[in-house]
Length: 203
Image 1 (tube, rainbow, N blue to C red):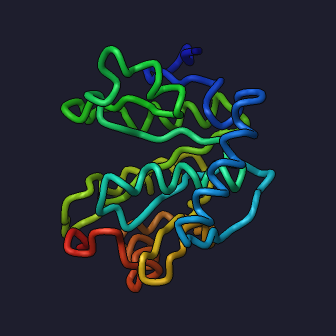
Image 2 (spheres, rainbow, N blue to C red; image 1 turned 180 degrees about the horizontal axis):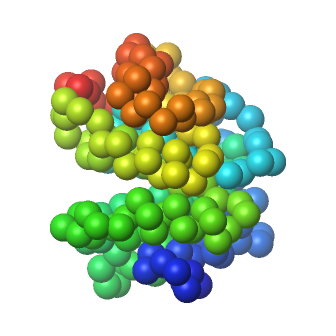
Image 3 (tube, one colour; image 1 turned 30 degrees about the horizontal axis):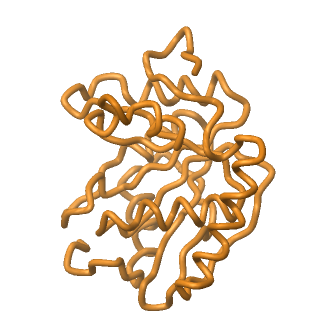
């Protein structure tokens, strides 16, 4: 594990997405499980892996393993932000190996800046952020993902799952303009007809 000199956020560079031998095996298993589950994977591998990935709708604990399999199949190498309680002993090492970045939700200061610093320190960087921030029903999206992308000068890739169509994957890139309200509204339009695993938790 390495830690940026300019950031207090710890990230593990050798993760489930780039471990020799094991990662190719997990990609194959993920492809088989998605096919057996009737899920169609949307998207393709991209060489320019420098963007913020959002995933929605986030309505169930099953979203994570499903998207993990999709990401493995599409050969992305990413990190994801999770509440610090997920990283407590004895699971911290495993969660970081799965790409996790521990976020203390009681300390809001500097999280965006620290993640932006990681983008500045690393030529290849993808961070997955669920814009709802929770699997429970919410009225407003959190804007941290937007400010990270805008301040780091990277696009936002819209990841999604749709139970109605049995689709999960990656859609289009969105390039922030700096107009937060207008851009968030435009992004949410894409997700308007997407149905989560537990639609009663959707906003």
